[in-house]
Length: 115
Length: 113
Image 1 (cartoon, each protein chain N blue to C red):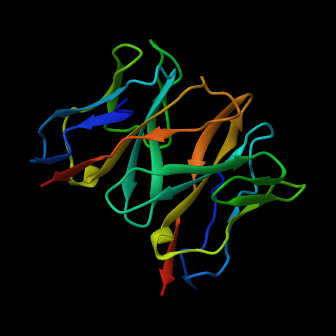
Image 2: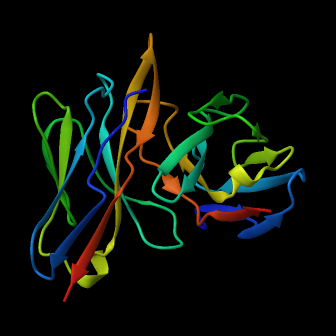
């Protein structure tokens, strides 16, 4: 099992460019998440999906869109990248669908630099 | 949105016990408290989870007082490989039955020889 995989590992964009970050999990998990991690800020939730076909906003959704393509895949799209979106992006999954016990499994991250 | 609060950093020596506390005054009633460990250039990794009192596994213990407004991660006899950032994760209520998972800002633990 690969667990949670993310592509690309690293990306440089110019302001205004668009891109999609890909995430896939092979653990048959119901829930998937996208976080961003900035220095000294910990992890902040961008969007999550409690099940295939549903998505909900997290703490910092502005400037992002997501798609839960199927149970395995959850993509994050930046339509017009801004320097403020320079960050490390983590995808995670959990077996439950928003229950009180949430054990999340994280991918290795995508480092995004917006110039 | 209520925040979770952790110390920014802690230093310890090999073989000592380390306790890291997270304050979460507004934790959602039914939510568990989960702690994660993160090494540089890696995603966070689950360490331990609990709802109340004390939980122990092969790597750590978690102490949660009755009011659940804080929790303490205890790492027994740390080694150099325990140098990492440690995060607590709780759910905080948004209104009605909605809640949002919120990570603490993390505690950088440095274990010295």
